[in-house]
Amino acid sequence: MGSVRTNRYSIVSSEEDGMKLATMAVSNGFGNGKSKVHTRQQCRSRFVKKDGHCNVQFINVGEKRQRYLADIFTTCVDIRWRWMLVIFCLTFVLSWLFFGCVFWLIALLHGDLEDQENSKPCVSQVSSFTAAFLFSIETQTTIGYGFRCVTDECPIAVFMVVFQSIVGCIIDAFIIGAVMAKMAKPKKRNETLVFSHNAVVAMRDGKLCLMWRVGNLRKSHLVEAHVRAQLLKSRITSEGEYIPLDQIDINVGFDSGIDRIFLVSPITIVHEIDEDSPLYDLSKQDMDNADFEIVVILEGMVEATAMTTQCRSSYLANEILWGHRYEPVLFEEKNYYKVDYSRFHKTYEVPNTPICSARDLAEKKYILSNANSFCYENEVALTSKEEDEIDTGVPESMSTDTHPDMDHHNQAGVPLEPRPLRRESEI
Image (cartoon, rainbow, N blue to C red; front, side, top):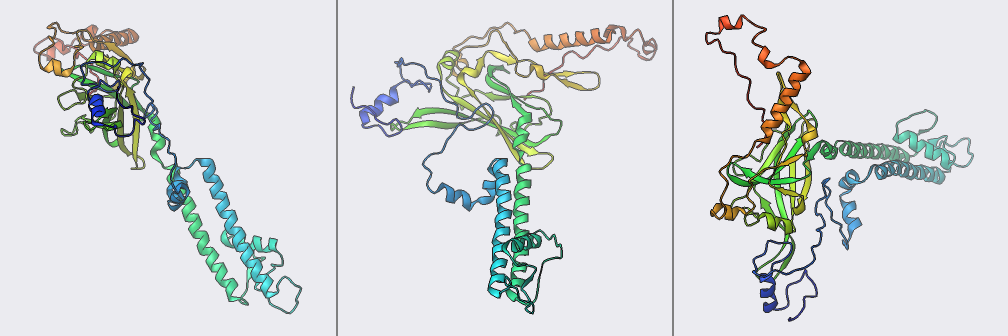
């Protein structure tokens, strides 16, 4: 058997083992070996969860606290609200205590804590630490009760009042900025951006395509919205190096510009499986046994704040439905368009979908059926049309009878046919 690899993340021990690994059909790749290694199928851990959170934990990070404190503003924006409130309260309380101690020391060194009738104190009515602490609060928050005040007896006390006022303004600006930045984070905007539960593979314009659907639940637009995708899978290089998560770009129209979308109604994103696609050699049977993850990303600017937001999701191989299409969700009414989100995640099976790979399809190794597949979208649209007529109680065929003058003005004398189909807005 040769030497055994002790660490899968290391380089193989010898050239012979490297050749063995290079010719093996790995379970999470598409494989180039002729013989299969029969191992128990293991479920891949998601790199990106369905809600968009990355399933990654950092360990053994050197000087983590120092690095986070060096970028304290970003740290405050990223932490949870409860810790933000703790930092908010501690910052003010500690600053009041610090300057209270300073004013108390000034009074102690000047002898203001002792009863001296003829001496002029540095800070009037400060005869204890509690009084010095209250004077510190009144100075920094500009309350100004007028009972305690600094005098011109001690220049150091005057300087500390000025210095505390400046420090108080800096703290206020920092805290307000951090709170506003945290409130304006576009992270919550992702809650109203949705991806379909499953991706599908079907024919589109005579080519095999990978498709998934995105939608915007808000009426406010996502400015400069664009999509991108990556395929994540492990692979072994020709030198025998094991890459646990190799990231491969999936083309969704970057060169032609169709990756930029107008996300008003749900849109189906299309990846054409061509010779440049990492799925070019993947058939339906390979899909059932494959172990990879497709990460899909939607980016754009929030219309209200002009801040960039990013919504993420992912599809495992068992979440990609071969030979399916999405049910239509966009229907045309008389004066507007209607979006039915109850159909957003639903798919239907398409007959005569090739089960071979895109390569075999391009090389004419699979013969397509000449029979036209039924159009399920048309059936749904017509069904919705009939339901609308039943609800209104007036069929469209009677519309010409209710306006007899129309035949007099229309030279043809033939009523206009209704619009044939209501299409789904897709790329």
